[in-house]
Length: 398
Image (cartoon, rainbow, N blue to C red; front, top):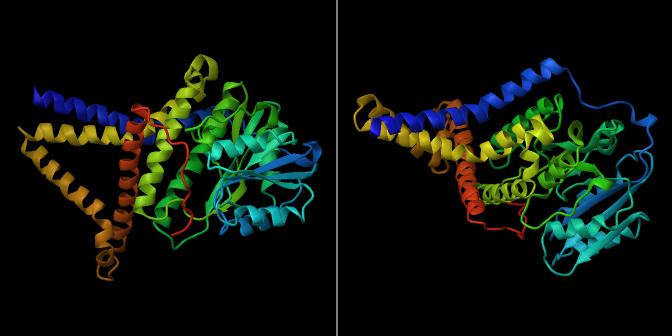
C-alpha cells in the first residue's frame, strides 16, 4: 500500500515539475518555429499614435521619486505628446510635495492625491479616469525608463490586433541580495515572454512598464495584481497582449532580503490567483485558444510547484519504508534541504577561497528558490482560504 502510494506521489510530482519547468517552454518554442514570428513591429514614425498618458502610482516614495521624474522628463516623445499623471496612495512623507513641485515646471503633468491609504488599485483607477491619451502607459515609481522606452513600447500597437504591450525589466544592482539569482529569474521570464509572443499573447505582465489601449482599460478590483489583471482583461476582450523587449525599465532587485522575498512572493501569488479566478473565462481554450493553456500552466501550474516537489519528497519517504535505496535518497533530501535553508548562516564559509565557487553559487540560487517556493505555497493557501491582500507598504530599500 505505502509502496504504491509512494510511486503514485513521485510520478504525479515529477510530471508536474517537468510540465511546468520544461514541457511548457519547449512546447512554446516548437510552436513558435512552426508558426514563424508573428510578433508585431514596424516603424512608429509612419503611424499616428496621438497623446500618451503615462501613469505612475506611488506611496511614500520620496527617496525614489526624484530619479523617476528625471527619467520621465528625458523620455522621447512618441509623436503626440506625453501626459503624466502621478497618483499618490495616501503618502505620508514628502512624495506629494516633490511631485507637485515637478508638475509646476511641466504643463502636461499633474498630481492626484488620495488622502487615505486605499491600495494601488485605487490610485490607478483615480488616474485612469482623468487620462486623456489614446494609449495608457503604466510604470512603477522605482522603474527608471530608457529615453526611447515609450517609442519601443508603442511600436507593436501598429498591429490592429494588439491591445496591450509589456516592456522589459532589467536589474541594475549587481551587488544586492541574490542579484544573480533574481537576475536569472528575470532572464528566464523574459525568454518565455519572447517565445510566447511568437505564437500569440504573453501569459504574464510587468508593472514596471506596460501599455494598453485606453478603451480596453477595466477597473482594477482590490486584492489582485494590477499588471496581470490588466493583461488578462485585454485578452478576454479579444485582443493580443505582446512583449516589447527593447522597451526597457531599470530597477533595483525586487527582493531586499529573505524575509522580504518570502512576504513578497506570498502576497503576489495570492493576489495573482485571485485575479485569475475573477478573470477565469480566459482559461477557456474555446475563447482564448493557446493562451488559456499557457496561462493555466505558467500562472496556475507554476504556483503549484511547491506541492509537486512536496509530493516527490513524500513519495520518497513512503518508499523508504521497504526500500534501502529510497532511505538513502530520503537522507540526501534532508541533507540538501538543510544546506539550502541554512545557506545564509553558511555564507561566510562558502565565500572562503578554499571552498568551490560554484558550490556557493548553487546554494545561493537554491536558497533564493526555496524561500520563494515556501512563500508561493503559503500564497496558494491564502487564496484557498479566501484571504485578500489589498494594501501594503512597498519596500524598495534595504
